[in-house]
Each structure stands twice: as C-alpha cells, then as structure tokens.
Length: 253
Length: 251
Image 1 (spheres, each protein chain N blue to C red):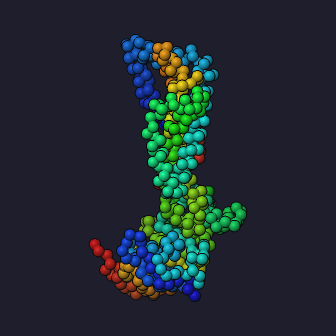
Image 2: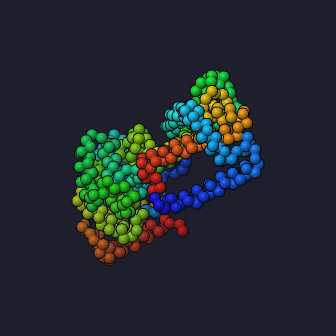
Image 3: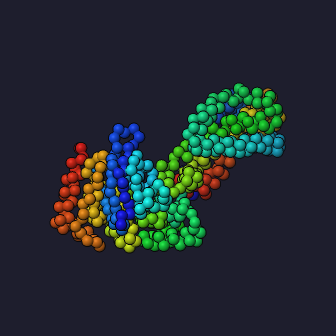
C-alpha cells in the first residue's frame, strides 16, 4: 500500500518563469526507506515543503494514507537540515514542542513520552541539559527524537547529517537504519551524497533533470540489515559510479 | 570574580585620573559658580542631602517610574502590533519615527500649558523620549526569530499565536532587556527636562533653581544623583537579565 502519493503535482516559485516541479507523480510504499538525490537547487526540498504543507502546489494533489493532505494535520514529521533545537529550551523542553502544539496530553504523560524518546535515541539523562552542551551528533539525535514525537508514520528528513563530520555522519547513518528497522516508519531522506543515498535506501529516487518531471527509481541491490561493507561489493560500486555520472552531467562547473 | 575585579582596576584609575584633572582645571579657573570642582560638588551634595533625598529625588523617581512603565507598555504594544500585521507596520512606523523628530525641549512648555504643572506634563516628556528605543529594539527582536524555526512549528500544526508565544517572545527577550537598559537613562533625562521646564519639585527643577542662584556646585549635585540612580537601576536590570536570559551568546 502506498503511504505517500503525488498526483500530477506542479509548483512554481513566485517570480520564476517555469515550474520547478512539473506534473510530478510518484508514490512511496508504507515502511520503505527512500533517498531523494539530486544536485543542489534542483527542487528536491520543494517536494518536501509541499508534502509537509509549507508550500501549496500550483496544481495536482498530494495524498498521505489515501487522504488528501489538505484535510489532514499531523500526518508527517519533518526534520530540517539544521537541528533547530531552540537554545532557550532544555533538550526535554525541545522534545515537548510537538506534544505541546498537538495538545491533549497531560504534563506527566508528556514527560513519560519524552523520557522514552530520549532513551530510544541514546540520550538518557540529557533531558535537563541545554542544547549547546550536546555534540553535533547528539543534537541531531535529539532533533530526530523530536521528529519521532510527532507520532507520524511518514518522516521527511532533509539532509539531516550534511553538517556533521565524516565519522559522525557514517555512524549516524548506521544508527538511523537501526531506528528505521525498529520503528517501522516510512522515511524519505534528501541528500546529495551518493554514498549516503546508496547505503540508506531500499531504492534511490534520483532527480535527473530540472524542472522535476519524474523521479527515476533505482533499486539498491543489497538486503537489510546492512553494514558499510556492502558498499564495497562490485554491483554497489558500479551503481555509485552510474549515479555520480548521471548527476554530474547536470552540474555546470 | 577576582578576574573581573582586576579588569575594573584600570577603569577605576582612569576615572580617578579624569576627576583629578577636572579638580586641577577647576581650581585653576577658580570660578565655582560656573565650574565647580568635584570636591565642591560632593560637599554641596552632602549639605543639600535633606531636600534632595526627601523631596526632589522621590519626585523625579515618581515621574521616571510612571513614564518608564507607560513607555514599556506603549513600546511593547506598538512592537507587537507592527510585528503582527505588515499593514499596521506601514501605518505606524512613520508616525513613530516622526514622533522622534519633535524637539521635545522646544515644545515641552506647551505640555505644561496642556497638562498643568502637575506630574503628567513631565510624564509625557518622559514617554515621548523613552518609548521609541523600546519599540524599535523589541521589533528587531521579533524579526530576529528564524523563519526555519517558525516553519518547523508550522509543520507540527502551530498557530500564529503558538509561534508568537514559543519563538517570537523568547527571541525578543534579550532585545527587550537591552531596550530597558537604554530606556532607563533616557527616562531619567526626560523627567529632568520636564522638571527643568516647569515644576515645583524634582531634581531637574532643583538644578535649575541653583542655576538662577549662580551656585555651580548646586547645579551639579542633583545631576550626580541622577547619574547614580540611573546606574543603580541599570545594574539591577542587568542582574535580572542574567537570571532570565541564559542563552545569549549561543550561536
């Protein structure tokens, strides 16, 4: 069953002459993990911003769980590139944000949920710390926990690891796969790092042209659970080189 | 703490050097009715302590306090209104700026004619001088809120009110304290100008009365008191700020 579906969706930024997303249709299965890969400025973030309702499509409709997003709330969790932990709130208070806004839970219930979420991402005992006391990887995990607390099945992660150093990034990738396997969420993940896309995705959705007419689905020939060793297999290496080729054609140096 | 004190030492030496030069210069000029020495001013302050502290300081502080409270209320209301609606911002901004081009000292005598010699003509002068920095600074504080943060909350289903409460207010808080620290000395100046122009009590009035008696030290004594009061209140606000705003300086 498809969880997210784009039905002939177009979008045009005010002041631009063309549709950046043009008559795009695609769908994403429940429980899958896809990376959307494309060069910077190709419009992949626009797809996210329409899905989470920050931008209204010029035409076409978007469905989550079979219903149009226009008539729903709280159907997706969105995690932007910067962790955006509010510096005036403690880590725990940051995690409380989606709960406070959705309402309907008592303080004690919120507190339990937050403690569980923190334990889940390995940040036990960080509830009363300030965000600036955490390292980059810990901050991203806190931001991920906050996204999980939206309670949505669909998670939109927009280059969440791009600001991290290489070693932290690869351990966060492994960590994210474990989280996904554990919680059975549907994850869409934007990146422009080919290796990251191949390592994480069940199949890669590549943006091969701007404006975006289609997303080219490229299955990744490896089973979950994965380790980084799978990246050295010949079929993975050739997939990586192919993808780099396709993307590089669009870059004008 | 020790480190901070050591840093203060050169500043203190510098201050005393300035006062010392003033003392020397004033002694050379030897005309206390126009240029009194610091020592003469302190002496005069001591001699006049009775009327200064029991009558005139409370009068000025009353004007300052009321004026400051009204300014904070008005300044915040204007800042919130301008942040809430771009249309209101377009309407209000020019009026707010225009209000600052009024040469207050020149038309303050009119305020006395409108509101009499009571406290309100002085409060009006104070408010006119003080509300502007509060409005502009707090408005900037609201604008410093990152769009990405508001967008994130919007994806959680936040209303405009949620965003105001959870992002705009915390972002504007450090700006608000800066505004208050600026506004305190200005409100005291405002009160003194108001009293200078027409009043029966207050430090501004007292300073002017000493002027007519060619008592140079008597002119300066209430001014020293005004500065001390301003510094004290600003320091208190600074303490409060350190308690409330813990995240300033974090990028």
